[in-house]
Structures are given as C-alpha cells and as structure tokens.
Amino acid sequence: MALSITSPYRWGSAVSIIYVAIRVSTANLSPITDCDEVFNYWEPLHYILYGTGMQTWEYAPQYALRTYAYLVPMAATAKFFQVLLDLLPQTLVKQLYAILSLQNTHTSSLSPSSDVYTLLLGSSDKPLLFAILRSFLAFISCYSELSFLSSIYDIISPTLAHWTALCNATAAGNFHASQAYLPSSTVMILWRLSAANQLRGKDTISIFWGLVAVLAVGWPFCAVLFISTGFWALWKAGFSTPFDKHTTSSNEPKGQSWIAQVVRVVIRTIFYTIAIQSTIMAVDFYHYGKIVSPVWNIFAYNAQSGGDELYGVEPLSYYIKNLTLNFNLVAMLAILALPLIMLRILAERPVTLAKETASSHNSDSLKILLLVPMYVWIGIVFPRSHKEERFLFPIYPVLCFGASITIDEIFDAFDGLVRKNMTKIRSKTSKLLTGLVLLSPSAVISISRSFALYHHYSAPLAIYQRLYSDISTRLNLSNNESTVLVCTAGEWYRFPSSFYLPSNAQLGFLKSSFSGQLPQAFTEFGSTNQSVKVQKGKFNDVNKEEMDRYVDIQQCSYVVELVPSSNADSNDIPECLQYMNSDSSGQWHLVDSLNYIDVDATPALHRILYIPIASEGRVVHKKYSLYARSSSWDE
Image (cartoon, rainbow, N blue to C red; front, side, top):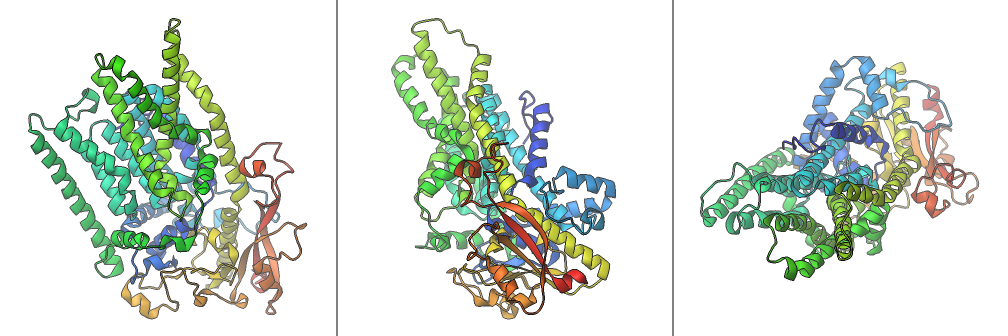
C-alpha cells in the first residue's frame, strides 16, 4: 500500500526512518515470552531450512492443526538473507551483530573461551539469521503501523494520529509483540493494513488482507475482527455514497446500481478466498502428503468442549493484569472510547441534526468502524477459560487508537462547557501538546516496563548464544562431529529454538515436574504419514505426558538450568543439579551464568518496572546457568 505523500508518517519521512530504526534495533532486546512461538513456529521453520527441529503434536499428520503456508513465506525470506550474508564482507556481518544487539551487554561471571563472531560468519551462523528474521518481523510490523498512522492522519485527524503514534511507539505490549513469530502478532499486522486501506476507501484491498489473516495464518478465530470490514464494504457498495474525496477509491465503478456493486464486492471476495485457500491447500498437501485443512482442524479442536483448556485455565483478572502491565493507562482509556462517542452523538443529536455535515458523520463512522473489533474480541476472548497473553495482540493497535479518541472526546466535552461561558482560546497545537503531556506518564511507565523485560528476562537468549559459541568452537577445533545433547528439565519452555544449536547439537529433555506432552524431533519425513512409522515417540491430542521424550543425564554433554541464589532454601535444589549430582559418569563445570530475576523474592514494583538507581539492590536474582560435562570441556 502506498503511504500518504503529506503525512509525517509516510514512508521515507524522517519520522518513519526513526520509527523503523528503533523497532528494528530493539527487536532482539525483547525476550521470547511464549514457548508456543518457539515450538510451533521457529522449530518447524528450522526444520524447513536445515532438516532438523522439534515437532509438536499439532504438526503430526494424524492431527494437522498447523498450516505450513504460514511458514513458507518466512522460509523464503530466510533463504534470501542466507544468500545475502554469504555475499556481505565479514566487516559488515560483524556490524550486524552490533546493530541487532547480539553482543549481549549482560555481565557474565565467566569469560568466553572464544569469539564466535569471528568463528562463523555468513549463512551458517544461525543465531545471526535468527536475529535478522526477528528484526525483519519488526520491520514488517513497523510498516503496518506507519500505514495505519498515515491513514488516521489523512482521513480522521492529525492529532489522533500523533497521540496514537506515541502510544504505539512506547507500549510495552508492542515491544514484544512486534517481532513475535506468532499468528496473533501477524493478525495484528494484517488488521492494521486492512484498516489503513479501508480508511482510504480501498475496500477490496482491505478485504484481501482480512482473508489472508483468516485463511493463511492458521488462526481462523480472528475472522470476527474483520466482520465489520465486510459489512462496511457491502454497506458502502449498496446503500451509501462516499462521504468525501478521501474515502473514495479512484478504481470504484461509477454509475452502477447498488445491486451490481454489492455483487461485485461479493464476487471479488469469493475469488480472493478461492485463490488464497487453493494456494494454502497446495502448500499443506506438499508438506503433509495428503489433502488437509489445518484451518478447519484447529477450529474444530478448539470448538470442542475443553479442547484448549487442557493447556491451563486462568481467571478473568489474568487479562486485566496483562493489559495493565502492557498498556497501563492507555488500556483503561481505550475501553471508554466507544461509549463516549455514543454518548456525545446522543447528546448532540437534537441540536446538531439540522447542521450535521457529511464529513463529521463520516469521521464518527470511521472511528466506530475501527473500535468495534476490539469490543467484539474482548467479548469473545475474555470469557474463555484458557487465556494467553498473545491472544490480546490483535487488539493492540485499537487500544492505542481508542485511548486517543477518549482523550479527544474529553477535550471536546470540556470545550463545550467552556464555550458556554467564554471564548474558546485553545489552538489545535495546544490541544495536541496537552494530549501528549497527558499520555507522557503512560509512555514513561511503558518504557520502564520494556526495560524491565530486557534486564530481568533476557538471560536465556544470552546463555544459548554462549552455548552456540562454545559448541561451535570445539567443533571447529576438534572436527569431532558426533552428536552433542543439550539437556534441560523445567526450563524447557525458555529454549529459544534450534537456531541456537549448531548442526551437531540436539535438544534433550530431562524428567521434570512438568507432566504435559513435550515435543520430539522431526524425522526426515516431516509431517507425512511415513513419519509416524519411523518416529520413536507417540503423539496425542489430550496433553498426556509421553515418557519416551526423556533422556538420561549420562547422555547429556551440556545442561541449562535456572539456579536459585546462594541464600535460597537449601532444599530447593533445581532438578538438573540433582541429576548432575547423581551422575557417576563424570564431573560438570559451570560454563557461564547470567542474572535472571527471582520473581518471588523481588518486590512487585521493581519486578514490574525498571527504575534506575532505585532498583539497585532491590531486585533479587537467580542464575541462568550453562554447565558442560568435564570430559567435553577438556577435550
């Protein structure tokens, strides 16, 4: 979509360059907060690229709940960057490490044995490729943000666009949602693109992006976010004339009857649906070896009683806490947006009915059009017992826009009271600045929250980066390509993906207190029926623990564990340490150890926010630790 040539958020403007630079450069500072992102998306992507990776039951041919169509575009992007990395000079590749924040700034307790940045340069350096792909996702998300902001600026209000931009740029929720490789994050991006086009009257393109979100992402539940998009397009085609030049597409047919225009919209929608779905089914047929419909399979699985509840249930307060952490005041303001608009319309209707302009009516209609999906989504998602933070990602753009509308409505209501007694003296500029000042505390809190996420929770990425360096160094020095097993127990869900394991390394699970179903390695047959015949372990769709997933400590060369502080309860010994202490086959050495917050021992304020100076000494840390078997260490 071409961005505006007048908006400060247009592509190529100074604002857009700064916006993109911040998003891309901070993408890899955000920790991966959801193991579903790793095991359901990054791991299958790694399998497509390298032939190895961990497979979840959703990719088993007997269930086929995940579509490979969501992975293929990213795989093509990854291959492009692999070629590019091989062509770049080593000096530029080293600069990429610095730009993408791969050279971790955490203080390590031990010095690395070698410099991985000079060891593996080019397409074989998987952590670098992983970082580039996360930054690429942030770039795409940023483009959708700028498109959305530019359309708000040109069509609705420049002031609303500026307020929305401040909320978007600083929100802690966007800090970890923008580069997340999750369907909910992709739906958020596609909703922005759809909304941006619909604001400009390009309903056909808007519907196309909605269909891509519903069919190609593998998350059909998001269809409710685009119901208003379809109804709006049909209403405009059949029962309305364009309100102004901004919302009229030059490609719209002139002089057609309303029936012909409605039919035209429906036929285009059917054509796009058939084209998208046919492409998806072809991709899935290639990877599953049979005709399947993951979109239908995942819908049917979640629709059955208790399907998703097998993976945990949470009270309603779970989402309220998440919205407060990620958006604080903005979330509360956003919920008030639609009620305030409706109250104003009802209050002003008798007075303004005779002089109401098409432009003001259209502005309210467009605001409501963008707000309705948020309330529909909240009404559907909040009551469900199974709750995940990522389920809220699709409404993040609307939260920022809604908060801006609420502030605007409050200003207008105040102006109405002022005009009864005195002349209105506030200019648009002062209104804009006042709104920015009011939103600034929320922005500061959100930035503080983002810093806390980085400082307190980024140790796993850094430790696995060190693991990759250590194994690669030894492989390079010894030329011993025997399989290295990297083991973890209760910390399996913080594994950042096989992009952090060299080609001769595999992930192994030690038995822990977790009693659900763990992934197992892909076979060479991927998700085809033949894989079932050769795969050692079984899959089930009821989250039942499969004991064949576990390895013995004697098989492990490395262990990753979260270790309590030295003054912790001596009875609280991590599972991996217990395994290592009972291992009679050799001794273990600490390779590296980084701070990771102890959420139970740290006061809530300093756990939630990063407060310079004040947080020093109040944040209690555990140690995210990497251990190596002595025999491996000394070879």
